Length: 212
Image (tube, rainbow, N blue to C red):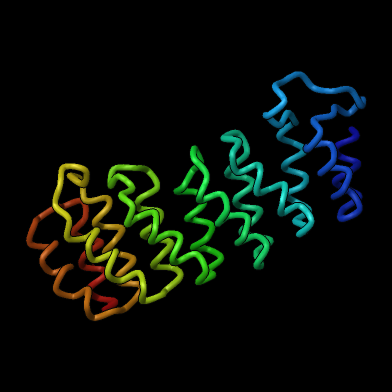
């Protein structure tokens, strides 16, 4: 097919693929049906662009983070490509409504750029609900980046006692991140958390203490 031929072309196919995805053209050159503000393209085309992994695709991949059908592929590609430009695209996506914050935070943690610390902390401090899917991923990302600026916010997440964390998922992620940071300020809060006896989170607490 025309798509397979583009993949075999490698880097030479990047610009044609970007153009086809941005303008929503089909392999025959005609427009695909859809609203003006929604990308219309085949998942194969996005997969081909991801497989090639050329930095020229970063601006488009940043836009695709808003499409739930390909957001994970786009974020994974940004992680693989890496670099300052990929981080910029991910940080911009954090500020937009309706984005998968957990996926974006996970990729930022994988890249490990310290520029992500303040934006992630800002979201946490502004009151991202503790039962939101992205909350544990943000805590984990902060632990991977290993910046001491995250300690205070993670300790607060660990100490908060409310119904949003009945299963210990949030406090467990916070403890895990604090263990990765290896900051002694986390010892007492983690010990206190252990006393709350949340079986699903206790292993996170003990593992964190071992790292400290």
